[in-house]
Image (cartoon, rainbow, N blue to C red):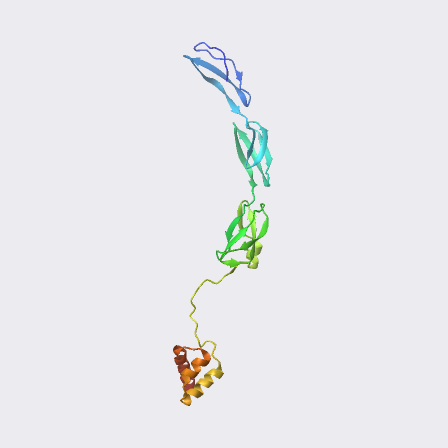
Length: 216
């Protein structure tokens, strides 16, 4: 604040604060140093944005309801040059990216508006589509997709299976095997040739045949 020359030990009359401020003050001079003797100046907030919502000519102690650019509204208060959000919130959309389903399969998606939804595309370890939704920058599997059990169908990685060669054995095969054993035919060679079984499968067939024979 500008002032004229002052004598030591004197004070000014009340002076209105500069443009952009509100209030009044008195100045004093003490050994060549000028300071505020009384009063205060509060700064207006002017023009600007908060949470992306614009405000215009916002004055000190003034409240205003701002409309957000995408969704929502926020009520603000100007306090000595600082805009404070006192109620509400601006909600934003979601950028393009990747999220994961319940089985950690990546799902790619495009940008979405807040509260919008779209089908994301399963990638890498899975195939298919899953409905996704956007809630204030956060993308997740939609409640509809969760309720209906939507998920990516996973590809099968390389793996080793322990398959029992006898799990699909038929009564006809077992009967043939029994006849060959009872007639002392070369059952191992014949059965393994027909069925592609290894020697372990042959001994399992033998034990099964003996067990059934003991029950007859």
